[in-house]
Image (cartoon, rainbow, N blue to C red; front, side, top):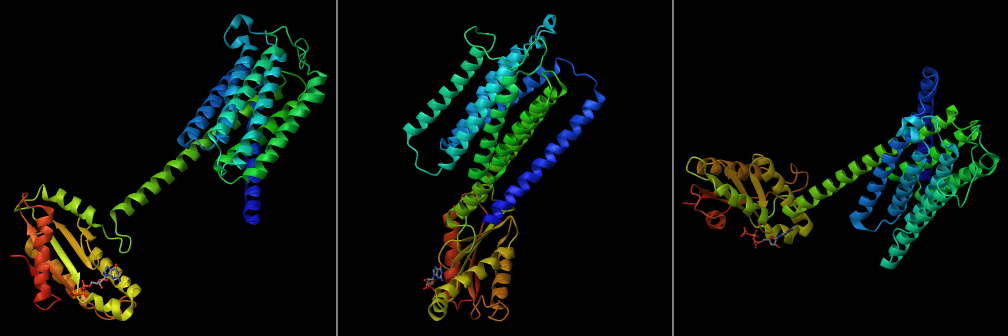
Length: 450
Ligand SMILES: Nc1nc2c(ncn2[C@@H]2O[C@H](COP(=O)(O)OP(=O)(O)OP(=O)(O)O)[C@@H](O)[C@H]2O)c(=O)[nH]1
């Protein structure tokens, strides 16, 4: 177990180093080609990021809505919705994205205030999400759900309102993080807030790693985004001033990393769809097959026969073969029920292998089987039955790999429907009568219903 977890961590960190290394390589390549970035790049990237965050928030809410059990998804949803709202504030600090006359008027301090509160909101919500994941299997009451949702909504609202109050939109409070004239970072940002945010994200990453153990793609995404935010903050921390190349690089990095997370989430959806489709297929097959022999069950057989009988005619007959093992009780009595089951499985496999894919082989009683052969005349059906009978009687313990404790024989009755008026029940009844005639006239025989 601990090796499995260690493997997860090693793979995760290797993946992070490779992805971040590739992104870094691409960005430096881009920076070498582009001498100066357009002031529109930052708001454009922010718009992309905003849309990505709304997309992720919708994904989390929808996933939560599926069973309304996984509260940790809602913590993520609030983190991303709040972040998107704060990005609207960031955009308003860049009027150029809407109003070209104010191309050079950028409120860097506001952009940094919205950035700070955005990260504070997200990092704390990520920790909350990990804690909610930790208690996911406990029986949580409806009141607890409501409290968590209300708490997350209040926290998000408080952060958004505080960001707005501290920004230049409100005269009530103020926070100096960037000097808008010189574009230099203020001491408060450089020595306190950036370090504090970095620490909060490190705590967030540690909490996520310990609790989730990076156990699936969803949490690979969650942990990866924490690493990306730490890298983003480190970039800003090392950068000289706002509008410096690192300012753009950090935003570009965050946008690309979020896009990667969207791909991870899409993969998660694909996995969910594939698993639920597989489960559906399994439960559907279980509902139409006999558990012991994997032949079709009685109800599936009757449905299929009724369907085939609708189009039956003299040129397109449908044949039914009812088969019953001879003196099967003796096998059970002499060798036990388990050996009896093996005999039933062996005979079922033989029946399945002896018919075409469009035919149906079903188990309709203890040791009673039925075959439906479409577009098969009475004579052809008799030949199929005869072939199966001879084949079965050719096996003994040695050449059946011990499946048959002794040679086993089968009695078979054939009936062929040529009119759509014939019901499925009547077909089986007639074939059954022919099979009983085979039993009465010595067993190990094929009789065609006349
Ligand atoms: N091992 C096993 N035995 C089963 C199963 N279902 C039914 N049987 C047994 O099948 C036997 C059927 O016996 P009978 O109907 O008396 O007939 P028979 O011994 O095959 O003799 P004839 O049909 O007259 O040739 C019974 O002993 C049932 O207990 C099953 O799923 N597994």
